[in-house]
Length: 287
Image 1 (cartoon, rainbow, N blue to C red):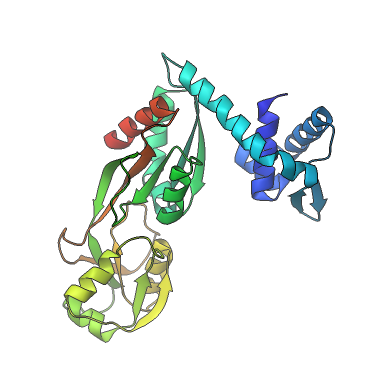
Image 2: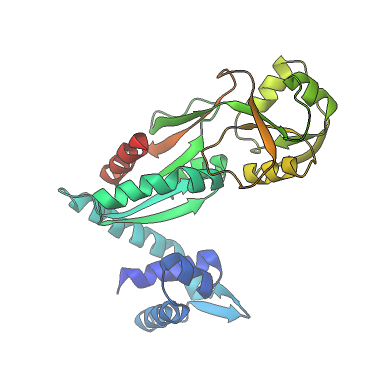
């Protein structure tokens, strides 16, 4: 049984679509469908059922799904452990939308250039979910905002960036002190759910400010666009470029580095793919 076919089955289930699975695996939908058919013939049971454009596992598919995940992971771990000279195999990396656009491409470019036998699985998400995925060993490493709580000793952490708190205002507005701007304009709040303390909220509390919240969003680029449209002002971390293009916004740092957000990489020290993770960390630090 070819483990690549099991991987295709898992991706189809996770994405709910053969077409989306094909995009993830850089294959044609026909090739993914053929892999599933071959796997079903090997196992002797139908594993997925189609309803329109969506796909769901059959009872047999659900029955083997967890074992299939474990088996694929174990095979990947064996490949990583056996690569004593040159890191090879798959490394599963998680990152936020802004980190995927701003930080990850440079890291992956260097990493793939030095270690051509590495394969990458990239997952986008919020810091809280990515942290849980690392702890559950669904990801090997993730680029996240540093949490406010003490991480377990089983975790490794390496800071990559300090992102100072930045006030965003429409560029056609008169320049005013940050506190005046925040008192007199609708406020667009950047929220990461329950993931630690928000530097902007801490700054507002320390400054004795309680701006009128108009919107609350978890997407930094969307906040920048809303400020451009004159819908309000916002306090956000100065995330790694690129920012959305052609925006008429003014960026003003507030609070110095006291309220900066730290972004870094988290991983499990006991991971079987530690050599792959070390290679990733080395290029992340260089970038």
